[in-house]
Length: 482
Ligand code: GLU
Ligand code: MG
Image 1: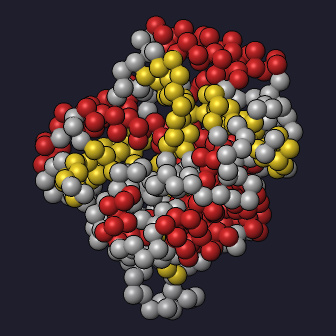
Image 2 (image 1 turned 30 degrees about the vertical axis):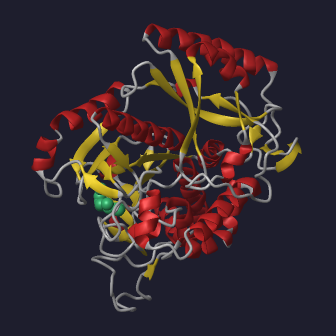
Image 3 (image 1 turned 90 degrees about the vertical axis):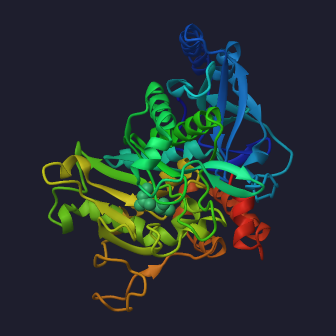
C-alpha cells in the first residue's frame, strides 16, 4: 500500500477521526489501486469468486468484517468501504466503551483492501478474504489502524537495517456446545495418534485448505487439552504473519463448520485446564544474517540479538496486556501449563515466557528464533507484531542484556538460585497487565496516543465487565468469541 508510513504525528483534524502522517492518498494513487484491483478481480472471477470479505481485527482481538460483491472490488480498492471508528472501542461481548480520541458515533473510516493479500477461501467456496488498512475519508492513514502500526514498526526496524520474521502458532479446541458445556470432537489422548484417526478427514481437509490458500503448513498435531489441535505455519514478514494468522483461523473455523464442529481459539476453553496459546516466533536479521545465531553470546546470540531479546524480556509485563489482552487470558497464563507465566528466558524452556529456540546443529543460522509463549489468540496479531518490534528496538537503543538463563520450571523457585532474584511472575490479571501497559511510555510512543488509549480503554472496560465473575462464567461468556 502506498502512503506515508513514517509520520508519527497524530492529530484529529480529519473531522473527529485521528490520522497519522501527512501524506494523503492522492488521485493518482487511487487510480493505480483501481487499475490493479481490476486485474485482481479478473483473476478471482475466473476462479469462481463472487464475494470478498474485507476483514480487520479490533482491539478486543475479534475479526470484524464488511463484505462486498466482487464487482465492487475496484471501487473499494480506490476509495474504501465505510466503517465507524467506534469499533476500536468494542469489547469482547460487543459492548462499547469510549476513549480520549476514539469512541462515539461520529466519523467514518474507509477500509481499503490489501490487493496483494486477497486470498480465495478454501473453506468458503466463492468467497475471498482481504485484510484492510484503514484510512480517513481524507485519504490519510487512520491513527487507530492496528495493521498500519505493525507496518510502521517493521519499517522502523528496516530503517535500522533489521528485518523481522515472524509466525503465529495457532491452537484451537474443536467440539460442540452442549448447553454451555464444551464437548470435545475427539476422545483420544494428548498428542495421540488416536485423535488423528478420529479426525482423519477433518485434519487432512484443514491442512489441504490452508495449502490451497498458499499457507505453508509446517506441522499439524493434536495438543494437550481435550479436543485441542494445533498448526504451525512458516514465518513471514511481520504484517504478513499477522495476515496469515487471521486467514488460518478463519479457514480452520470454516472447515470445522463444514464438519459440524465449533472452534474455540479462546485462551481458556474449560476453566482449570490447559488453554489455547498463541505463541509468537520471531527472528531478526541484519545483512541477511540471523542475529540470534552465530554470535559470541550465550547459545550463539550476537550483541544485537541479545539486546533485542533483552528489550522484549524487560517489557514483558506491559507486553502481556497486548499479547494476553483478555480477562480470560489470565485463566490460561498460570505456572506449569507451558504457557510461560514467568518473566524469564531459557534455551528450549517451555515454562519460560521467552524461549530461545536454537534449532539443531547445522541449521542454527536459519532456525534460531525467539518464542514468546505467554501470548494467546485473544490478541490482535498486528498489535502483537508491532509491539514486539517496538520493545526489541527499545532494547537495542538502551543496549539491553539478558539476565542469567532459567532452566527448568521456575515455579516455586527460591528467590536467589542464580546470581540475581528468581524469575518474576508475569501479571496475574488483566487489571495488573493493563497497569503495566498504562505506565509503558515505550508502547504509548510506538502506538501513538489514539491507538494506545483506545486499546487501554478496552482493557479497562473488560476488566470491569468481568469484575467478580467466576472463572467458569468468564470462560462460558468468552469461549466462542474469538
Ligand atoms: N497450550 C499451551 C499454551 O497455552 C502451549 C502448549 C505448547 O507448548 O505448545 O500456551
Ligand atoms: Mg502447542
